[in-house]
Image (cartoon, rainbow, N blue to C red; front, side, top):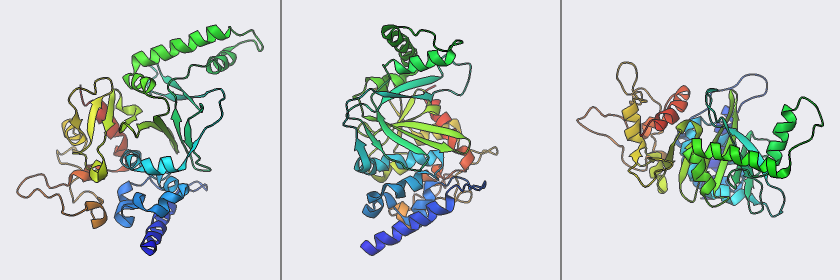
Length: 328
């Protein structure tokens, strides 16, 4: 068993190294997680891979954006195994994250508080990622202080009182909660149950929110819609993933498969599904299928449901945009 685990570990490292960005100016396209599964199997269950945080970080560094969504729910054990606990009772720090690309939106950024006593984080070393829990929206004075200093025409001008600074921050938080139901969901949750995963691509920064306890995932392009996943390997199948409105999770949900078909994300300009078997290199070996193939004899649906994930890199963002329209 240990020999097989070592072989799988070696294969995962080889694939990650092949797709790793190089500092000399050239890079490879991000890879779909199905390539890892097809060549190395269900690697996230290998205890040798789970033991070393850098092996999973090496995989995350080279994945497509949509593949992050597929893999992260599997990483609950890895995250909690390597998460470090903040035991010091110090001032809470803050991070700003862009919510919208459009400059026409009134609320562009959200400010989360982190690094409180009892928070957790995964040390990522030299990797272009940050993984940590948040305590909700930031309610301190330092963000407003820095904003005012940055905007001052005269260096050293007097600052408002701490009470006034807290009022400014509270107003920003109120506007953000009003504009984004997902922020209300996160801010009202038990502190340190929501994790932020942030990583750097060549074309900019990406980030997402995930709650392993509630099994909820959200990407900023999804708007008011959150993704709910089921336990086990069924989460690889878009028929088993559900979408819900962030502020109405008690209402009926839709599967991802339904939404992708409704929005036509997996249909090309000729009306054909882009995920047909002759168009994709899907993760279809025995390590991922788990048994029988999902054939539908005698019908026009010749694809496997999981092949919706095996899309070209430039289609990754279209998933999240499609999800945002699920209940419109």
